[in-house]
Image 1: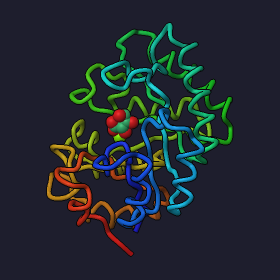
Image 2 (image 1 turned 180 degrees about the vertical axis):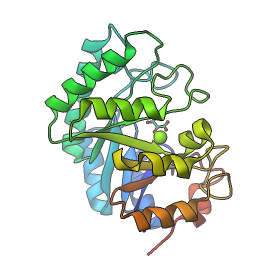
Image 3 (image 1 turned 45 degrees about the vertical axis):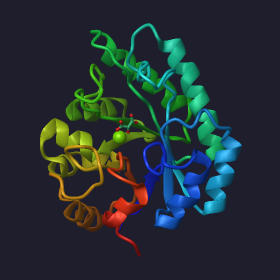
Image 4 (image 1 turned 180 degrees about the horizontal axis):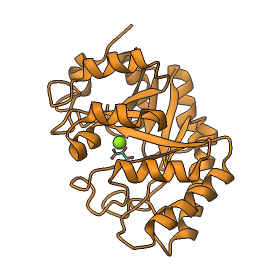
Length: 251
Ligand SMILES: O=C(O)[C@@H](O)C(=O)CO
Ligand SMILES: [Mg+2]
């Protein structure tokens, strides 16, 4: 079975962030991801993760105002300086958290120069952080209206064009199902560039069980494929987090 991580921005929100690490370990996760860790000192988060025996798998580049503000700037022309400041901040956090991946958010734009801007900023980031693993994620525009990176061919083309070792695709099965109607088939098609996976039930974005995506079949296929990365539970629990973990294969 793949390694499973809990997304602490979405799971265990019944308790404060600092307590979610122990709860995740207790539930059987061996890693965690935090979309936006920037409100809490990295040293505190790192201590909690170490104490719980958890690897920190992923953080996002900081959008300035998650509660309704922009979704990053990497593809937004005119915001190059802002992107670079944000990226350096993410890099400092990632280093002290020893986070395996940094997800670079493209942002919301339909500017004709967005692709070129994204390429330039990603090239800059890949060179600036040669030892970091960077990811880009395809996100559906129903959930995130106007998000630039909403197409798998576009993402794969950008990764191929850059051709750098430290950039790959973050595959969120929920967004894939929303966009293509076939999450598992989409994973198969883009598997060579996928280095991180996130899961949630579709529709609804709740527990990864019982919706359109056959997760037991997906996990078996990941296993058979030799996938060595993490699978992160990034969903909005329908009830108490602990009560909805029947889908998590343990042991
Ligand atoms: O799927 C998502 O929404 C996240 O993985 C993310 O990074 C942006 O919210
Ligand atoms: Mg995701």
